[in-house]
Length: 431
Image 1 (cartoon, rainbow, N blue to C red):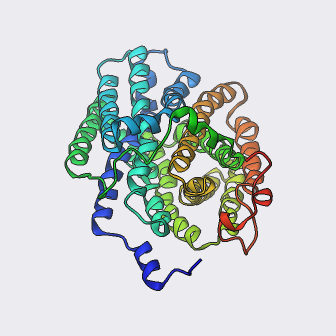
Image 2: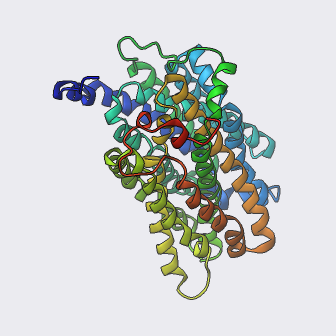
């Protein structure tokens, strides 16, 4: 086998200007999802009185988990929906569901209608979470995908920062229903822009490269390491999206005495830090040999574990503890998207269907964690209090995720490719 020349390597790393443009419009469409998803936590001060006692802490958590639950259902079919409709059409359908769902939620202060609107938004989020990274990946060579996906991975923190900072402002000035209609307008702009600009690369078909049937694709689910990675995503999403993103601003408002706007802005700093950490981690992960990439996950969990002890602390020095939580959550949470997500297609040895199923498994585990985390924490917190609920749910989840990070990839400084590792040593029996 001949060694690649410098020209071959340069060709493998060359990125066209058009690729960055396609990343930009895909990114704008993507952030519509967290904008819609995370408009609910900053609206707590308006929603509870507007619904006249119909909302409690568990039901409030359900408004967040309803979206994630649809993501669980759609995680695997989404790839095959994209195969039939094409990547571009799936993104357009996703943004349309987000816009219509948001507008529907603002029609009336009716809890059933609001839940239905959240389910519709969940369809949009469930589809875009699988299709959008493929829209990015298809434009970038393998050696540059870590950076590209690291940049795209900031879609959730960017959308969250915007939601947590603008939603209370809009609601305070014009009423909470205006928030729903404003975000529907943002989705409309994203729909038109993506429709007008996005194109597939020359020779690409937009079907995510999938061959075979859904049943045939299930063989990739036998890869045990992808489920280990998925378990880390499940635990991370349960604690970070399901608990921290849903309840932390309410904790700051009700327990530490901040007003709604300040509490939301403080919470958004966590996601703001992630904006810088995610792409930087992607760059670092690209430079690490395969057998050392798991170290990023270890560092991430070491940073997050302390927050399981003191995230909801209310004693002396609570403000200082709050800032420590914000910094550790921002750095640790940002490392996840930039380092662990790009590992998923690697575990499938970069086959087209394998990579697609890897992303589907990531979405399944991520949404399942979110769907469980929000109402579960609401239920435990309402009976045991903020701190005890964190000890019972967050701390064990972070510790278990730390242990699992050691088993995602084969370890060793000389491991540079899965193809270099004998299958009986690199993979658990049954791969």
